[in-house]
Image (tube, rainbow, N blue to C red; front, side, top):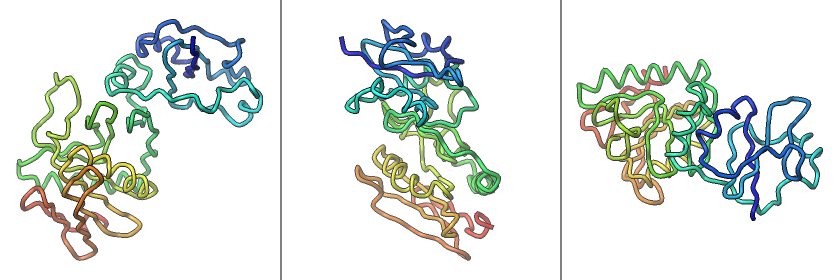
Length: 258
């Protein structure tokens, strides 16, 4: 029997059975390969005969790794990549709370950067400008998820949707529902360009904007392909950032970055 370790916060252990449908798991606090950090009491390791499941905040500290020594999992142990359905089940069961800043990218649950006052101010300003410019042609969704595939459910800062999402919809809006996504990038610029843009393009999202706060410019990426967007327009101070997908949509860069 191949064993894997599942590490979850002990405060959420009671929800785990509902969220992770993995049979034959049990606490193994004294067995090789699993333990509880007695000093902090904040983690419990579980053993499964089928899959490994690793949740946020489960990475052991350096001192705990040293303490475990040769009881750590072998380097070749594979990660379990969650499906969007499993990800949603965790949220519904309370394993992931409404206030958790996480998104699903490539089957991994990724911590998102905290929303600072600077980032918040730019998102609010951009939301106001887009709503004013919409003219009823699209809906603006702020920091809500989009379902891009079986293992991808990111949360762009803003999304332009073709139609209003239905309350009874079984999943968030998908690529066919999205006209464009927008990311306000400061400390996350490299991640947004190198991880999220290829994800959006490969999923067929028609257009992605990157508001580069450090560079004081707005990038409009369009022409999605499997390996990224084919075209890039850049707009700076004194110009209007224009959409290649939504006819007539443009916003003054100075109003966005001012």
